[in-house]
Length: 190
Image 1 (cartoon, rainbow, N blue to C red):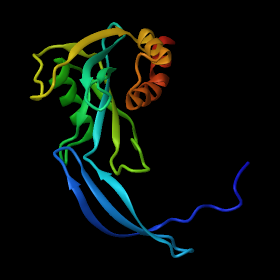
Image 2: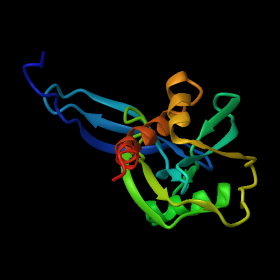
Image 3: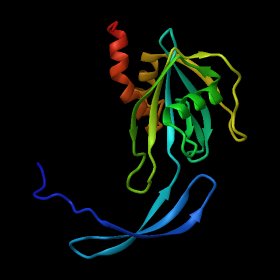
Image 4: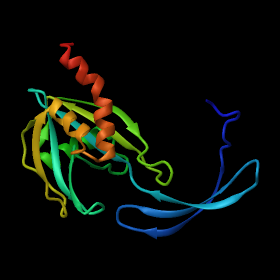
């Protein structure tokens, strides 16, 4: 059932810093409803864009990383990824993050798509990159706070981990969702 009318686009007003951290800024942003005239300040987390990488090896395995995550106070199985540098192309960033975190490089890299991590409170995008023919060619170059376990699993096993709840990172699940049509093509021999 659809609604009788479309929602209004709120008019954006002034913005002020509420807190600045090394990885994001918390901003108070004023918005005004164009019909009701309601004015409110909403909290928006302003963060650089991110990239997550589906790295497919020549023998049809996906490269995964396992690392401790401070937000959940637990380890998390994920695809490689990280912060995109200001002005950096998402595909270039994906190739860089893959190399730095895992030591893998590939021959073919392309953008699978982009998503809004949480549009209710976040202003950034996460770009999902596919790197094919990925092989380990260099040493890892971790950031100071990184400590990463790297493995590769058959693609279908990775999807089984996702379906069973062993992979719970929502942006990784987005990447797997966008990779699914390409994986179907590969399995069909196209």
